[in-house]
Each structure stands twice: as C-alpha cells, then as structure tokens.
Length: 345
Image (cartoon, rainbow, N blue to C red; front, side, top):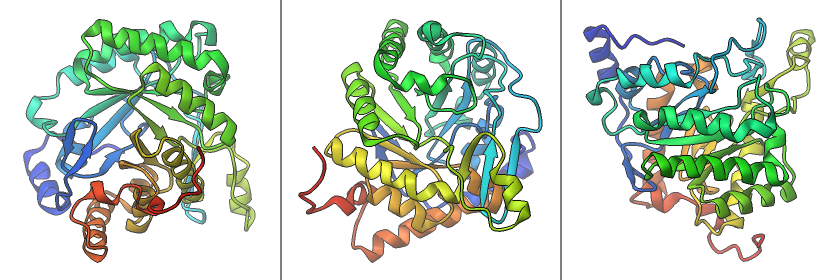
C-alpha cells in the first residue's frame, strides 16, 4: 500500500479527511496522540512515514528489516479472501536491509514524524542460522538505532524457516540479551519489545514472558500471524486456506485477544502490551484494550476498508469512553480484568 507523501494538496486532503480525533494515550514515556498504530509489514522499506503521520497514526512499526538485503520468498506470496476478511502472506522478510532502511528513515523530515514514535521491526536474515541470530539482529539494531524510537524483535514470523524456534529455550534469552546489550552500547533509552506468535501454549507463553522480562524487554507485541486456518465454506475459500504462510485478519481476532488477556493477567498489568491481530472495527480495538493492550495496531483493515478505517475506529473509541464514563484510554486498559481474582499467577 503506497500513499503519496510528496504532493502538498494530497497531504492537506489527507489531514482534513482522515486525521482522527485525538485520543491521547500513554505508552511507556510517550504521550501518543492516539492508541492506534500501524503494524509491521505494511511499510517494509519505511518509505511512507510522512503519509502515516498525516493520516493520524499514534505510532508506526516499519520493516521487518534484516541485517542483509533479501528478496523474500518467490511470488505469489500474498493472498486475500474477502469471504474470510483475511490475508495469508509468505513474504519472507523481503526488504532492502537495515542499512538501507536507516538511510531512508534518516531522510524523513523531523516535522513529518513529530509526535509519532517509529519502531523498527527486526527479523533474522534467511541466510543466517539461529545460532548466529543474536549478531544478525543486533547488527540491524545498531544500524537503525539513530533513526527510530524503539525496536520490535520479531521471533514469530512463520515465513523464515526455523525463526519461531527462537521463541524457545535459551535461544530467546541469548537473542534478547544481545539486542538489549547493543541498544545500551548505542546510547540507551530506546525500548525493545518482543513480538510473539498466537500459536503458543500457555506454558510457552509463560516462558517467553519470564525470559523477556528478565532480559529487560520493555513490553510485548501480541500477536503475529497464525498458522491456523478458518473452515473453508466454498471452493474459492478452500483454495485460500490451503495456501502456506501466516494468516492475518478477522479469523485471528479472538485468539490474539485471548493471548493479550493471558499476558495481562500473568504480568498483573505491569508490562505494556501492543495488541494486534484482526482489528477492523471499534469493538475489535476496544476488546483488545479492555483485555490488556495499552495500544493496538492495524494492518488487514487498511486492505479491506481503506485508510478511513483509522478515523472510524478512533471516533468509535471516543464514544466508548463516553459510554463507560471513562476520561482516558489509560483507564480502559485491562477493564475486563477488574475484580477478577481468578487470574493465572
């Protein structure tokens, strides 16, 4: 999805028509202008930062970037189902490499991203083994450190062979320690999040939560795409669900919300969660937030509904706050947990 950020009349039109009503939101030390961010994968090369700013996103995530430039998996590698309101992708981290990504971001005028934190999504180069992954990720982090406000360590894409194994055992600890150590060497002060898969048992979630917090991760992004599939209802949808890759969109919504609920309960609301997965309406975003997400991200909704979905959801969230007699988005975070004493320890 490419949106012009170079033609002044188009920029002005976007501001007038698409800029949502402000819903100031707190994430770590940032006062965001809204709780909705752009998920990784939409702007793989970080070419449209100014356009996302004009649309009114509270924050964005660009990439994923790898240490080495790579073309990604063979085409076709993106599939769409209007029936399921879902996408399946097997892109494979196609990107120009973290060095080129940093050069592109360095050219974005400060005004074109003011008040909108930019996160870099970091992945493992396909040519790099899991054993060498810490160096691969930390190299990207160092290159991108001067031009972003934070990082998301992606260990959950299903489209790079073996990548999800980095969520397991000591591999996760080694990777996160390397990334956080490099971030500190670069000057510190830029949070590192970890992005996880939805296809995890509670035991696996516990491991990731414990290791990530011990290593000093600032928070978690829940969740990436899923390997699960909805039930086919006709020949066309059967062809769709048989495609290899990660599924995003409506069928992922419930599971990602369940994972958010579990993480919030496990951490007693003390670890920021960026909620993503199947958000296409106000109610979807609201459920993520009241189940524990500090902020949320969208991707597939932009494909199926277009840019105006951002304004639609923002306006709806404002109405939700009024309906519940709540004065800020921060008060809504974790609302579904209030008074529940049977949460997991």
